[in-house]
Length: 600
Image (cartoon, rainbow, N blue to C red; front, top):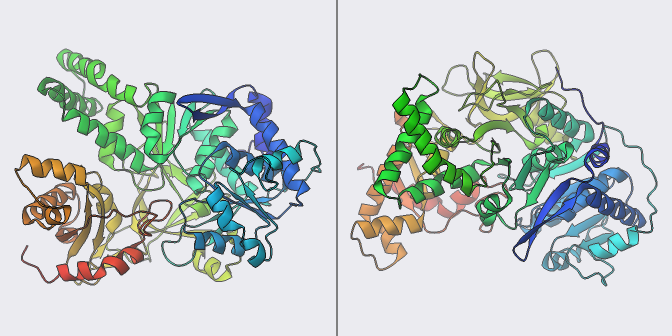
């Protein structure tokens, strides 16, 4: 049964929250080392001024307004102002290639672009002459005296002027473009009804309230951050601290003292790695207490503990675990993970520390949440049961070599109407479900267990066949390798080959420390990465991290490279997924050469 919607549209959502929680803090921002908070009512005032200003510029119901910006208060103000006008927000990342910005602005027929920095603003201005729909470029960081500045827009809006608009739940609220691991980005059409159904379902299952506080670590240009962080927390009257940059998230956690964090596995992996790295520097007694405490925390779920064990676990919690929790603010009760698979090892570790982890699953095309673990229905390793109103089926006709697995199909009020002006893509992604209704092909491989928990095991497009006819889904093994303190990134390769090989980006600081401990002296990083001793150590690490994989999935040869995959070099999407086609274009010859050495 679908969760009863608490609101029909996102403008109503925001108005309701301001009415109920107007004096509560909404956004926290850090300036000159100090955190300051802006209340819901203060943000609402800016939303009204922004909406009036956009209306004065001629923005009307049904038109598209694009924004190129990282998370900041003005981003949310612009979004809720657009919703109030019945306009559609089209978010983009600052890290995207400028050619993608222009493609999206042109493809969605935006009437206005709001740019974060002066550099981006200047990059956008020539489009006024080349993109027929574009009428205005607004710069968030331009000085108030510039008529194209965001401040001037708010000043213009203080005089009022926006006429009341009737918003239909079927109106398009957001047009979120996929990050384009293959081909050009596609615009995912998400209606107010889509997003509100998803938020209402999350309210029904998640243990959060207006008293909660989070640190923003997800880009709102991504479906996960857009719905689960921004709209879901705002709809509750909760508070969000806006992190200065991705590399300062852990620092912000310690300063803001959040009660919850909604993020992707990369953040939780960083917490896991940071704790284990710190433990290596501690006295032997503390290290032993930590290891024993983690082991007892795992065992207490399966058996009663004796008094001595309880005392030891209490000591571990007081002397070690509590200090670790203090490093993430000391009040963190819940962690919500999505966007990619969370390692069981990391999830259980956070659990042992007393931080309950709820992992979920979804896609931009499903607004985004499909399933989630929740209180009373939680199974580590799964992505939970479908949320209220959403149904999951498995198409076992899709080729895999595991029984009862297949492509995950989703139906429910959260499923998008389609891609923007992409009829051919719509035909490829929609199917007829078992009851004759319309369902979405997710492109993910998985299965549902006897209790209704969904497990994701790979991607249809990423899986490949070895010469022995066995299918390999590389992502789970790659995720496991990234947990190694020696490995920053990795890509598994073996399509139509005898066995798997891997392109590995070492964590150079950790590798340097290991090399020093071994008494190795290399003239350069290149020499270090070419060392047979180093390669042997990395293969040992890969074998250790890949214990759960099947024998034929084992990585037999590796190539070590110095440059990490990133959005800047085109190897990662803005949502941090590997662009395999781009990696192969650059390093394909290096990987092919590995098959000449089959001695291992």
